[in-house]
Image 1 (tube, one colour):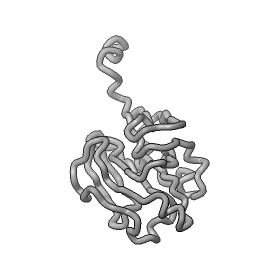
Image 2 (cartoon, rainbow, N blue to C red; image 1 turned 120 degrees about the horizontal axis):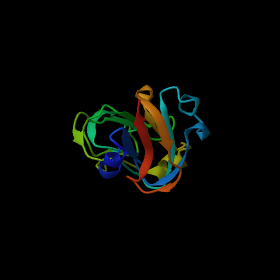
Image 3 (cartoon, rainbow, N blue to C red; image 1 turned 45 degrees about the horizontal axis):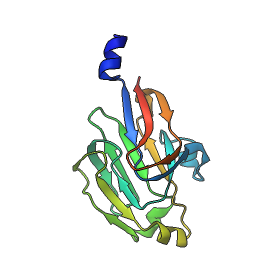
Length: 162
């Protein structure tokens, strides 16, 4: 069995890509306690250096808030991924956010979902740190959380099915 896994990959491992380019940091370091204490699920955070946010995996764009501040993708294997762009950015009512996708559509990893004017958000006093949370974290026995500089689509989380 070990040889087969080496040849064909481990079917229990699920790779989730970074939704944007920037710096991955531990989720525990973010200023919002809901995310820092992993109340919604386990994950990582990204300090984006680019305002383009992409689907982190293939799946269905289950939710896309009209304000553009958050979206979720559910993969074919049932992984529920939430990307929340900045903190309190819902208060902007979509200002500085451009939607490039539609809720309910099929997406592929790397499809552009939302574009954001990060400099305008920062100038308005918003923290642009972006948590990426696995909402159904209990379905996974192991989380390998990446850190450091990433390009959009680079591995950010490696999950192991429970």
